[in-house]
Image (cartoon, rainbow, N blue to C red; front, top):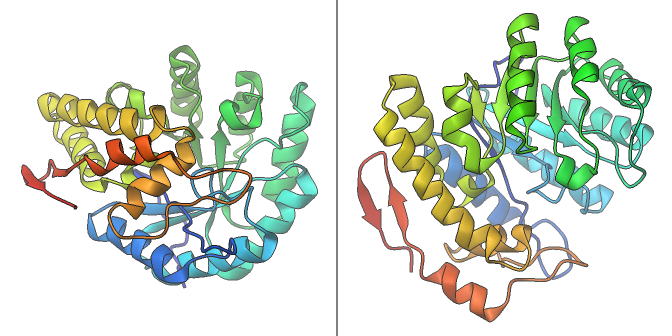
Length: 309
C-alpha cells in the first residue's frame, strides 16, 4: 500500500493505462507489468484511473480493483495519484472515499462533465465538496478536451488563495492559459504540471514542476530524459526529447483512430495487454497497428536503441 503522505507531486508522472480482458475486467497481470515497466524506467510517480486509464469508462467495481492494484504496486518512495473523475460531485466524492480507503494520498479531480459547467460557482462548489470529502491532497486537473469546460482562471485563483489544492495538472494546450496559471502558482505556492505533450519542453522552460505525458506508457525513458535535461539546464537534450515525444505522439495518438486505443495498442505491441479498450471504443485499425509495430524504443538516457519486436 502506498503511504507517501504529503509527497511533492513533481517530475515525471505517468497517466497509466488500464489493460482489460475480453470481459472488460482489469487484466491484473498486464496492469502490474505496465506499472512496473514505468517505475523501472525511473519515473517519479503513477496517475491511475485518469483519462488514459479509462477511469470514467470502467465499471465501478473494476475501477476500484484497478486502484487497489496501483496502490499495491507503487511503493512509498514514488508518488501515486488516483483519478476522481465523474459526471457529478456526489459520484466524484464516492470515488474519493474509495481512494482514501485504498491508501492513496493524492486525488486528481476534474470538473464534472456531460452537463457542461458554465458558472464560477459550479466549479467552486464541485472542487470544494471534493476537497472536504478527504484529507488527501487535491490535484486540480484541467482537461477541457474531455470535460468540455476549462477551469476559469478566476476560479483557479480563488481556490489557490484559499489553499484548496497543492498541485495542478494543465492539459488544455492553451499557452496563454498556462502562463497565467503559472503566475497564479507562483503567487500562491502550488505546483503546476504540464500535461500537454507538445508543450513539454516549453512548459518546463516556463517553470513547470513536472510532466504527465500519456506516451510515457510506451516510452518512459524519453520523458525521464526530458525532465532530467530540464533540471540540468541541458536545452539540447530537452529539445531532442521533445522531438522524440512529438514523433511517438504522432504515430500512437494522432494517426490512430482513437488516442486511448492507440496508446493501449502501443503498450500491447511491447507484450503487455491486448490493446483493446472498453466499449464503445474500438481497437485501432490494421493500418494503424502496422505503423505502431514499426516503432522502435529509444532510450535517450543512454543513447541506446532497443528493438521491441
